[in-house]
Length: 562
Image 1 (cartoon, one colour):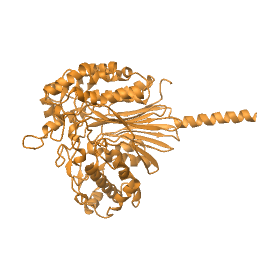
Image 2 (cartoon, rainbow, N blue to C red):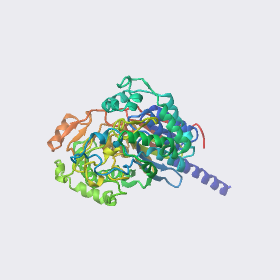
Image 3 (cartoon, rainbow, N blue to C red):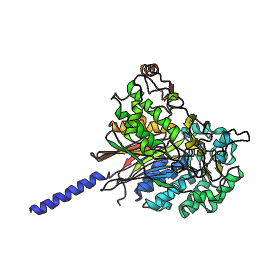
Image 4 (cartoon, rainbow, N blue to C red):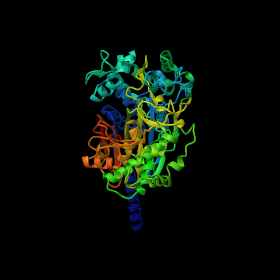
């Protein structure tokens, strides 16, 4: 009897360990309810998190034409769950510079960099990476066919989606550029103006492009009918794409940035994202500084000074590591973070110019993010973009594909500026086939008790938003707090704290200014974080969508067993 009892207890213990290693629930948080529903549909049909990621990404590209799509790219951070421990991978689907692009792409006869072609029209577009990423996810990680996972996006393109207040706001920002392109105006405007809220937007050409991608895989986009239309449309409008660009495009699987901080392993985006490197510097540096109460003036001062220093490094040192040497190991080390922290004056702001001169530039703010997990603990954090709202405001006729304007994320003039105002250098100069530096920062934090998955759009402010959300997570705050907390940001240049209106009290603002900080209010519509939390000890998942946006987070029990 005793041996049998021992065996029984062993089996029960093994089952308990296995149950603790998988969530048994599924959760999706995206920036649009139709994308959340699409991902859950695929999970319920027997797909895993990676199939659901295809559905979410493709559907977001349909219903958020201002934020992402087949004409853009992005980053996917993957967690493969399992009883023997999680495995993390990073899929780099960032756009690449066309082979005919170079440092002088936007210079006129007088050697002056022209801003308009770097922002509007096909000359502003890098070679898209999202279609290749969707194919790769299906082939290497999914359980369903690409055709099954793309079905919700095709349906959304055919049946249409309703214009939201967010669509109207972002369209208004790009209205002039959208009016300049007949196809963009036809699809996304009404009477050459922003459609009324509730207007149905249908995209039959995009549905057909998605169908060809579903049926033919990579060749359905990068070769054949779609490729021919892309090249004709781009070249006739002044772009420099050629078939060699489409043939050469490849997604790259990279090792994510990983470091220990605040009792967690932080897993985040490697180059060509600056995000993981910056998080490593700020979070590890904060740990080496004297403790201060979260939200206090001293805590804010410490964070701002760490932001200032890591963004200076971003400007001076970072770029596509396939093209330049970047001292990544040193920049993510705890010793380097401590060195940065040691240079902080506890009572006074450091003028950014004291850190060394670079010139300002920036990146587009309109991006999208989703976070999801399946019942087996596979998870995805994905940040996708076409850069500015509606990208280059150029839609290739016959394809429904809105092109990105990610070329503006390069330092078109390493001594000049881009669309907003981050600082740049030769490290991020334009070069054929190169990937522009990005702030997109899909991130996960994990220890034995907890998994946090988060990310957000927001251009250069993405890194600091993810930072603040991550600090809420390690403080044990509920996921709703991660996505809703007031935000502040410093990016070295311009030398100012950008803060949401409700971030600081009057007394706190006065105290920060007395320390030498410039504080500038940035309004409330700042970011659109999507996040989820798995409490392994309780066996519970929670998810939240940023109240600033129109997204939806949903946790359910799976409707179909493996």
